[in-house]
Length: 198
Image (cartoon, rainbow, N blue to C red; front, side, top):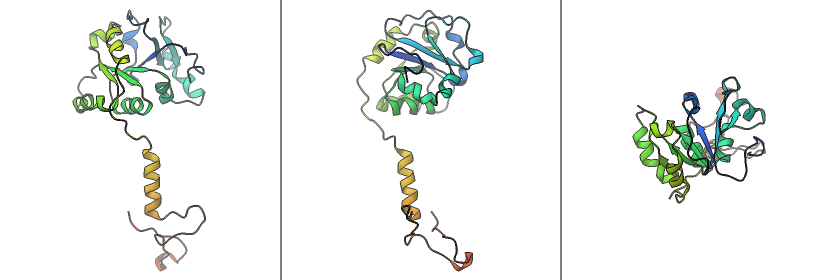
């Protein structure tokens, strides 16, 4: 993934990930952490800044043109710098990527999220003004030195649900023979299988 997007393989990477918020507020920041990490930022091609500073900028279209997804970029970096939300937390937990986060403002589940994140995720808080000024070094250093989180949830939920559905519906295992969970009824002419209600 790093090679495909021309990212260095020999240094920790920190991805600034703000979705619809964008990263406009960071373009003038004087980053104090460049001895620790290389920075990665993404924007749509039409919004790429003319002056890109010290970061590795990636047009979002370039990610998808290579058959990749944004989560692949999350998996390729060491730290995501973000405002926490369900999607980015899940992506970081699933890919063992640490999170440096700042406040996202009014959000009803925010307190619960930040309280529970350390169970599953290496994470560290940074004040918003410190974040916008590019003073990331101290919290990044603490974050990079953290031990792995105490819990790692399963990430095969889709497979588990698919198996539960198959078991409940009495799947035929691909041989065209239905078990007793599948029956034919006179109401449909005896031609189509009718499954018991879930």
